[in-house]
Length: 206
Image (cartoon, rainbow, N blue to C red; front, side, top):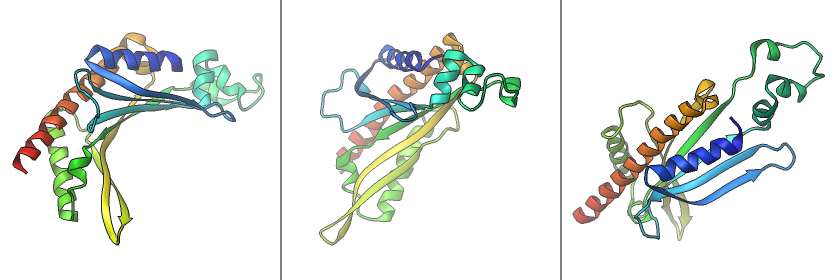
């Protein structure tokens, strides 16, 4: 499976489950030709501005491009003469991606956090909400960013993130990959809806 095919199938999978993708970016490092892909997602019927959103991204190294186009021999050719014996050819190269998923949490809720206890409670509520909606152990880590402004340390943003490892046959077999991406995007849809409900309820309670 080549980079363009994986990126295309990710966008299709997101759209098929009812996600709207936007702010899609693709980058190529000019020196080493490593590539990266990212896109933001919200529910299709949401209106901007999007204070809750998911960002999906993956990194595609140049060795993986060589393997997807030329096979194991293409990877070996990056490092030594093709006729030279090596263990790479004997064992074969394995392709893989880490699909990073990051949920941006609403600024209005984040800026209300004043203490470490507030942050801990906030993080626990998001993690508990995820546990109630999934049947796996790939749990979210909650990350905060802060700025020092007007002699105070202020929480400026927060996100919840985890990643999915897709490798070997799961990445090479088109039908398997489509199924995996559909499951991941379906979970993204459900959890975005869960986060919207969670923070709407929090606002009502004040």
